Length: 375
Image (cartoon, rainbow, N blue to C red):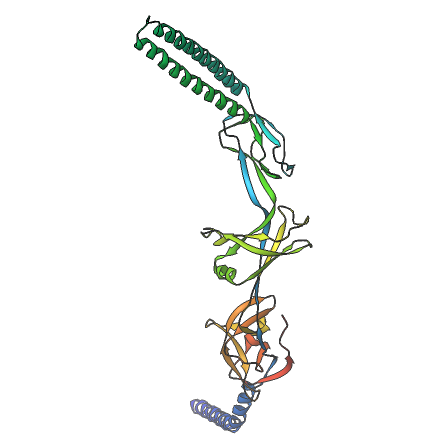
């Protein structure tokens, strides 16, 4: 029985060896065929769309949001402290030069004026008495009834009384001026842009009660990013009203010396040329800065790739079967287009669809040729 089992195991082992030998021989016969097939699969052409490169003068244009503000905006306040009892205007009201805008309580000012006038009357009375004393002293001195010293004392008394009268007159005039300061008067025609105090409020001397935009001049104020500071040296500026309307030329007026610490922007103010009724205070505008630039190529945004080594495009090599990576300088992005410079020439073709998935080791097949996009 043991001999039979040993014989069956031997026959099984011989069968397995025979099957393995046959499989190895079959693999050897198929190997020369499989390798070309794999190589052919790896070399299948990639379908791409290409765009022609055209260089042209490229004006750099950027847009920012601004607000129309008065050219001269003056905060107005009283010269003296007091209680505000009336404000005759509100935001948006037009005022004329000399118009009363607000009033303070005048009770204390009237009392000061009355007291100053009383002091002035007393000083004038003393001056009249001193002058009479001088006249009598002169008569007595001429008759030899008084000494020269008495006449001198009477004369100096007149000078002293005159000084007191002059001082009392000045105090009276000061009190009268302070009474006039109880009225806040417009010094020029304009429009009220803000009210900063209400009737019943006690205000300090010089505290702003309202803000007045004087004259018809208009400025546009907007925030300019720090990296765009150099644009102001060459750019032409224009403003467009939001919601449709006028298009106005702008002239540079001033720029803040410091950058805003939060937004990293400069506050720029430009004068609005020939403003009309549509250019009302507070309206929002789009500020367009256009600066002439060096020639650049306008390409679809999808043609520019960045693999961590900087911006680049895939240029169709001579013969049209392979692509090569060409580094470029990205000037600006405008919607779905991009302005680029460097490494390219007019007449080149770059991959504009499928650029992000290009395998440079495989050939390409051009399925469509597009013209360079217009600005």
